[in-house]
Length: 217
Image 1 (tube, rainbow, N blue to C red):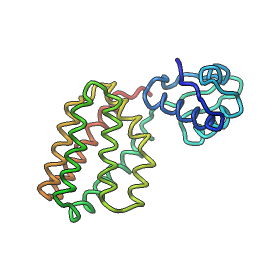
Image 2 (image 1 turned 180 degrees about the horizontal axis):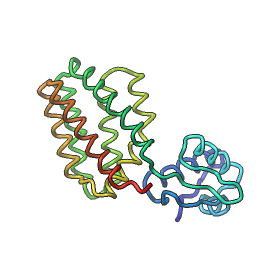
Image 3 (image 1 turned 90 degrees about the vertical axis):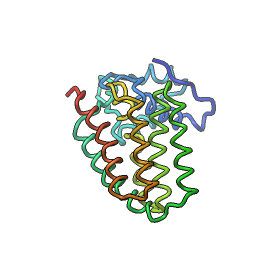
Image 4 (image 1 turned 60 degrees about the vertical axis):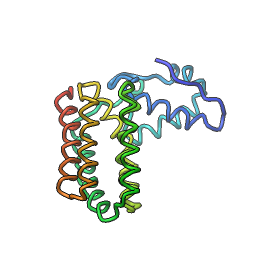
């Protein structure tokens, strides 16, 4: 396991926080594995003080658990958390479509299509594909013009990426995800609420089902 080293002292804590969290999200750090402060400090090239601050923040957010005299346990994806996140995501993405449809114009449709087309160029890089997929959904939230709704989706984005990368590793097809986006856009272009929400919910359900079917609990 290796992490990039921080270059500026004032960024040590934030650097460690981002590197470790991204390692977990991208499955570079094995779920359920143990991390140790000494090896983390050496790998990241920082002292224990900023590292401890980063670890405290990660533990507060539920990514890790400190075990006295043992080390740092990397959390695993569990069904309860997946259920909670997808319940929130499904309810709010339906709301996004409801708010977005009356606002849509041809320029907005064009921007949505352009953003989606970028996915087709990321088929060989699953991690970038997942990040862009969630950015696409965040972009729809932005276009809905509800700032609080946008912030709610943004706050969950790390978990979306974590689950999405896990789903791809468990067999979710990139082609299938891309085709599901096409159906969402077709619904938006038709200004059809039912068609679009059905496409969004089907898209989310497919990811959810892949994760749940492969959970090891």
